[in-house]
Length: 224
Image (cartoon, helix red, strand yellow):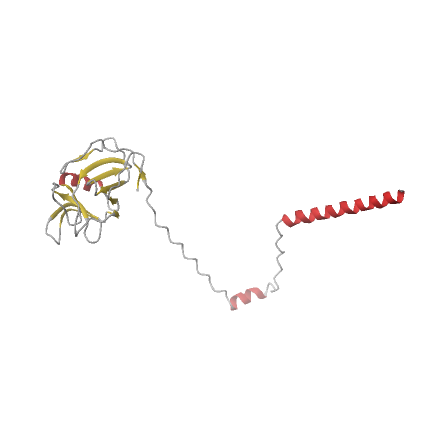
C-alpha cells in the first residue's frame, strides 16, 4: 500500500513539473523575440577609413516630397434664407446687415430661375435670372469664378456684359443684363445689372458657382 502511494506521489510531481514547463513555454511564446546582438565589424578600425576613401558610398538622393492633396471645400450649412417670397423678373434682394465675413458660394436653380448668394452660410442676396435654352443651354455643375471684368463686351455677339464673372473656358458667365419675361441667353446667367454690381463686389476669383435644376435649399441643409 505504501509503495502504491509513493508511486502515485511521484506521478503527481512529474505532472506538476510538466505543466509548469508548458506554462513557461506559453508565456515565452507571447513575448517579442529579442533582436540578435549586433555582430562586431570584421574590418579593422585602421582599414575602414581607407576603404571609405577609396570606394565612397554613393549618395542617397532625398525622397521626393509627396504631392499635396487637392483641398476639397467643406460644405457650408444654410444658416439663413432671406424671407422675400417669390421674386419677379427684374427684381432682387440684398441684405448683408449683421452678417459676418465668410466664404461666398453662389447657387443657381434653373428650374426656379433664381440665383442666391451665401456668405458663410447666410443668404445675403437673391435675384431672378435669365439662362440659356434650346441649342445653347446653361451647363449644370460646380464652377469656380476664373475671371472678373466689370466692363466686359462679348467678342462673339458684340453685346455688353457688365460685371462679368466667368465660369467656363467657352465664355459661360454670370453678368448683368435686362431680365424680363420671354428673354434668354446663349448659355450665360443673366441677372439685373444693379444686382450684378453688388455680386461683382462680393465675389472673388475661385468662389464657387453651383448650377442645378430643381435643387432647393432649406435652413440646416448643406450647400454642396
